[in-house]
Image 1 (cartoon, helix red, strand yellow):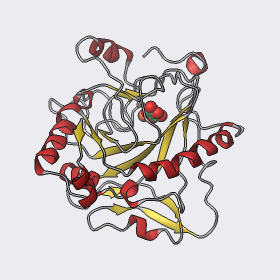
Image 2: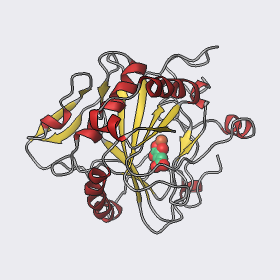
Image 3: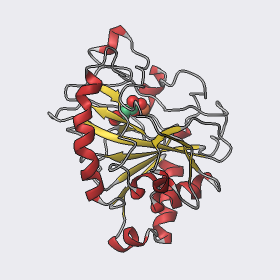
Image 4: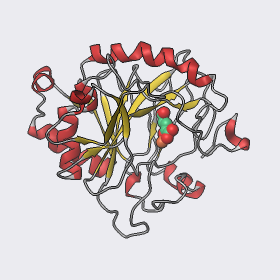
Length: 289
Ligand SMILES: O=C(O)CCC(=O)C(=O)O
Ligand SMILES: [Fe+2]
């Protein structure tokens, strides 16, 4: 965990030792957590709207469940007054992702995962596998997920489970099933056990897209939304985010390009996601692996 001071946040500059530490953590552990990066007031603007949007997603004919019940894909509202520069183009986050991914870093995603009360365990998975799998040495990171908790995230409300160092395991290949094979999960459990980090509002989690992780049960009585952005190397092909016309300035940044199209018509941000890899035998009860 790296504490960002008030003056670093105010000026949008990270101390060089903290930058070095963040880069080292992402390379070695596959993730880093930074505290005090985003103005909590901004998250407190987004939070009620995302919580209010949950029932509309749950009442869809096919809610976009990810693997198992209780974990839905949910976009934050892509229009004013819910967009903030320190969320979508955070200076400190960009300094870190650019240090890892190189010049021309791009954000290709503005969505999120909401963990509903009563949810069950997802299978352990990566969000993308290795470009060159089964190598003696893993390739450097090409994609980083930037997660922004929308409520204080704790083990009680189903903080994301992370498997430190697992991004260096080259088993899962790009284009494969993103599930980590059961025997690999079992053999890592004792040597490198997983953890559920606590990340309060204003904090941020940056993780290598290849890091093993999963959604866990939410034991509280409130949904736990978490925004997800994906920063990629300049040469990665990717999709486009749809944002309301007039909001271009939130995404203007000299080092981070956002792959966005700006649209005049209302954006169907609550209804356009699909469910992912649902299996009847684990949908209700959760996956052991
Ligand atoms: O919401 C979480 O804690 C993780 C969800 C996740 O990893 C996914 O749906 O791919
Ligand atoms: Fe995931």
